Image 1 (spheres, rainbow, N blue to C red):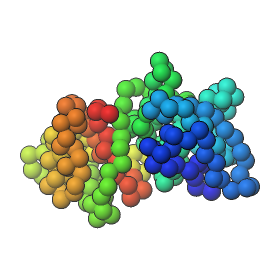
Image 2 (cartoon, helix red, strand yellow; image 1 turned 180 degrees about the vertical axis):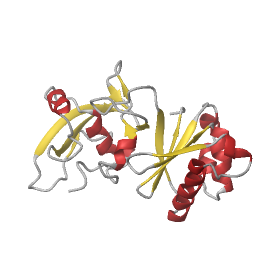
Image 3 (spheres, helix red, strand yellow; image 1 turned 90 degrees about the horizontal axis):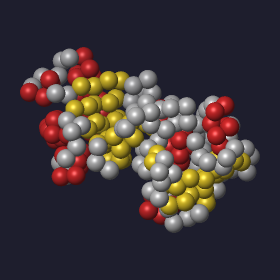
Image 4 (cartoon, rainbow, N blue to C red; image 1 turned 60 degrees about the vertical axis):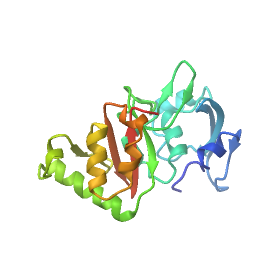
Length: 212
C-alpha cells in the first residue's frame, strides 16, 4: 500500500471532518490535527513507514497527529522516502499545520527550524527533467553564465534535486530553462522573500519560498 490516507484538493478536504478510503485489510489508526486552522481527522495504516518511530507512537496516543503523518496526508503521491526532503510546518500557538516545507525534521516530522513553505507547481515531465539537469550542472560546478555563482544545488538523500538561491535568481534560471515555474516565482509575494528553492522529486516539482 503506497498511500496512508487519501487527500482531496486542500480546499475540499478542509470542509470534511474525516476521510477513510483505505482497504479493509489496513491496520486502522486515526489522529486529529488542524490544517490551515481547520480541524481534520486523518485515518491511516499504522504499519506503514510514515508511522516511523516509537516517539510518534507515544505522541499519537494523545490523538494528535505526528508531523510525518500530516505530510503523508498532504503529499500522498510521493513515497515515504521521497517525502523525507519535506517537514511539517506547525504553529504551536494555533496548534495548526500549514503546507509542507523543505527542511530537516525533528523526531515528530515537524520542521526543526523555520523552513520555506512548498507548493506543487504544474510542469511537464520534460520540464522536471530539465531542472534535474540544471541542478546536476550546478552541483558539479559546470553551470555557466551569470547565475552560476548565485544558484546552488544538492541531491538530497531522498533522491530529490534541490536548487536554491534568491527568488530572482531562481526565477531567471527557470525562465531560461523554458519552464512556467519562473512565472510562479515572479509574483510579488514570492519575490519579497530573500530565498527560494525548487525541489524536483518523483517527477513532481515543488516551489518553496518564504512567502506562504
